Length: 301
Image: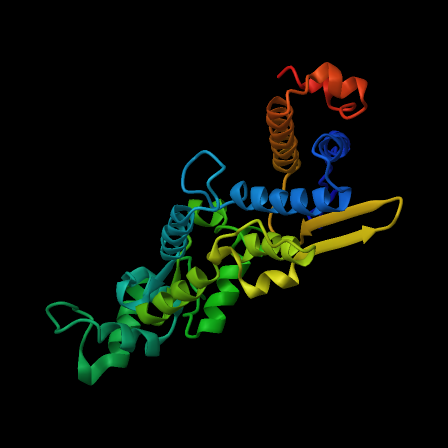
């Protein structure tokens, strides 16, 4: 069984996993083809559990509904931290946009002149000149975001790897982007919330495409868009069988992949022990008959 990722500089050692697959097939009296497909599907499920978002600080619950809800909250707070509707913009931010037309729209959010001293219906352009001079700052030349497409492009440009959260440097420097209305931000957040689980969904389709019918995945991790990012390869012959699964998107680090592979190996070992105990097969007998070989040193843990 192999694991592939198109993320840069990812290297993992799969040699011990291969030994577990071989011993598992022998001791459980199962065809290697069946073992490969099932364990590959379980590995994909493990990757869903151990890939963000999580519902807590400790990885491992990435398949829970609570993880989806946590992601929802993060998306809302992340976007709202840097995108501000025009009606909530302060005078300096409005002045930095450099537009009397935007200014004219901004002052309509105030009920009367008492609420906004810059409102004067019959001399609005003159008032803009006074306002612009008073609140001008070095942060001039900004523009207002007026469409969903513009908002999406701006958001993408300030995220890590185009898919992650907004860069810390953006927040650290207090950068804020003024959006024409709060309804536009709300609609954009709703759109992004619907996409929660797309990255994980590639693992679902990897498992599905190698013939998985037993291992279940959460519905929110079955986005059809995941099909574009899955990797699944299966080869079988009289002398050799192999399964490769993978994901083309998301930040996959060596340590996480290696950890999940080790967990999968440990799970197989646990099943083997349980099977041997139920059949009253000792480790010595399993080794003597060639049922257990590569994993024998690990049966003491």
